Length: 358
Ligand code: COI
Image (tube, rainbow, N blue to C red):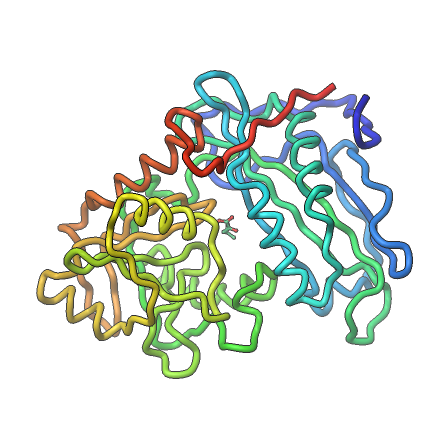
């Protein structure tokens, strides 16, 4: 018997060919939904055919953006098993975002069960081609119908799924990023640590300007001094100067990335020198000018491990490792992907097999 009431679609969609997948353009056949009312808690978890939500135009999320989400992936291994990568940690981070955004947490076991249940129902949607996966997007929105600004008393949790290829059009080739001296992403005491809609809305202008200048993404500097590296918005940033790997610390302005934590763990397992510290753009550019900036890469669920080939700042471009993927970047990519597809040993038990649906 299904753990959650399940209404299966009678009109399954045509699935795209794996080699046409990019990021997030196709959604699967089903959605998981659950409601919240103050005094009652979370109730009515269910799986339904995928379709539009009906919202009153005065629904508070549409006006004040009280919304959180997370993103994780399911992978089809060579052995045919479907595995989630670090589902528990994603569920915990989702609840951290809920706390920051004044929303009720969802019990981690229910979040985990919603992942397994929906992926189980839409298991045929997990693509097979190397480098593809099924992206899970758990979300909570405020559903009070009223125009006053206040934390919502009623909310909706939903989970949708999308078969994906690579996030960047470059695929796993090095991307060009621009350290912005005009746009900032977050300040301490703000929402930078939460995966909330507003952080992505405010990234659009910087992204537009970076794209117009020929860059793929923006590297944000801290919002106060505009000197220290924060994150890229769609990924955390890491770099190697000599034999030291450096990444900005979790100080409230950047996302506690799951791939960030996983790659840091792997590098520590390998005995590398890894430092989480504030690093200024001047230090990075100076290292770049003198050939000491050996590698730079971003980490994220969507981006996996993405090499940075060019770093731009105030009209100067630094070519990193001749614009090629660095050795450590490639090793990290291979190690993460190997664990995700169940090809290699999973020493920290980061993956969990999704049970087949009833
Ligand atoms: C992710 O990596 O899961 C993200 O959420 C980044 C972006 C697609 C919003």
